[in-house]
Length: 332
Image (cartoon, rainbow, N blue to C red):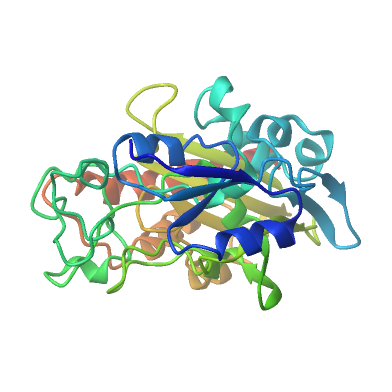
């Protein structure tokens, strides 16, 4: 690990000032992802700004829903009464990720910024456009079983990166239409979760639209207008402490056998949580049955371009979507 300097910030304004003082500076709170990357020499900051003491761990109701501070721990979020009552989908996703020890340290903001678990990204001896732009993508012609089938320049030779977003929480936040609140030198801005994470394009080194000198302060979850049921379904190689091959976060409202509202977010298949609003809109008014669900699942993965080792993800994703929707429909 490269030697680095360390300092603490006690207020957001101070943190922003410190992060802007040197070009190669990083924020650190729980450190559950960043410290690993530093050990592997993937991240080599000159200075770390500790933001763990900022007053940003609150979980509270607002006029429009629920606001969760960026420093709220994953374990606290998962077990908080307001989260479990109003947004059980988020609680379920959080509990399916990592170990209890990691959840006790990992924060909301850190989870939003979590980087891919691609083997090639973690190995500095391998080419990786995300780690070193222009070096190539080892996964495209290598072992790519866990990699993306959607959103990576349509799987063509022009693909720059086929890594996936590893966060369970991010998939749930996508289905819940979360808003990410950030602050920087130019003031505050609110970013819809669907716009926060990026597809790789020609700049795969950037995972989000967050500027280097901006700080996540909270996330807002808008209260649903109609009561419904939800599920987070995660398919992985082992029963616990494994990243998703495919996951589905869904929330649905069913009345008299017809779908009145639905959100479906897919994880483990793209650079960001994957949603297809058109597929959701076309489900409205349809019977809550397998025929409707299979049609939506097919539409959601349309355009998928698999690689040598991950073609199975197309059928797996469709089956997982159908199963999640069937479970939610039965719960209603």
